[in-house]
Amino acid sequence: MTDIRTFCRVCEPACGLVATITSGELTAVRPDRDHPVSRGWACNKGIATLDVHRDPDRLSRPLRRHRDAIGFDPVSWDDAMAGIAERMRAIKARHGDWATAVYIGNPTAFNALVSVGTTPFLHGLGTRQIYTAGTQDCSNKFAASEYVFGSSTLHPVPDFDHTDYLLILGSNPGVSHMSFISIAEPSCASTSTLRQSDCISLTRTLNDSGMPESGMFSPLTIAS
Image 1 (cartoon, helix red, strand yellow):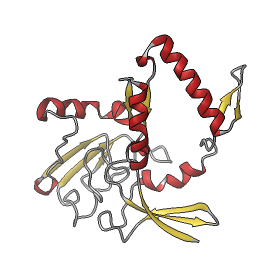
Image 2 (tube, rainbow, N blue to C red; image 1 turned 90 degrees about the vertical axis):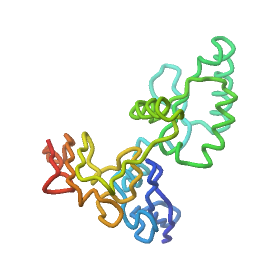
Image 3 (cartoon, rainbow, N blue to C red; image 1 turned 30 degrees about the horizontal axis):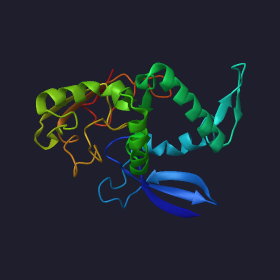
């Protein structure tokens, strides 16, 4: 059994994690208490890594759809890449570069090696139809930063250290990190003032019992 230090790739705080490897298999994931920034904190997104890894629907090899469009057959990586390249060349030749669209998920966005590999690939496609997880839930922030600061990549961090009252809508930082906040440990008074300030979180998330999920900043946190 071997413990390997790693980090969560779902959102920007990149909380430290420890992955346990047993006989070559991932068997456990836990927060890294020795991480200098997150110091043992990780929200559900990072801890769920093991469940995602073991999910029976997770793809671990290429699949090709049957000709009757019912079911899939496993194929080799070489065959899959060759078949995809052939079809993509035909689509570009017939409909142009913009006939191809790309979607990039969070784990890809926070993986340095994948980013290096995808950039020349995207340039080769020549398409401007590039979408990400941010396209779904953060486009407003990108647009606002573009208009206000002149760049969609500039995002001010809220000044929690000087906040007396904080109203959070549709989010519970005790359960899942908030996008663009970049706080490693939202409940720790030594790293933020969320617990010390009058923080009200309005959330409609339901727990396993079907009841509204309680917040982490009692008694001022409200679940509705």
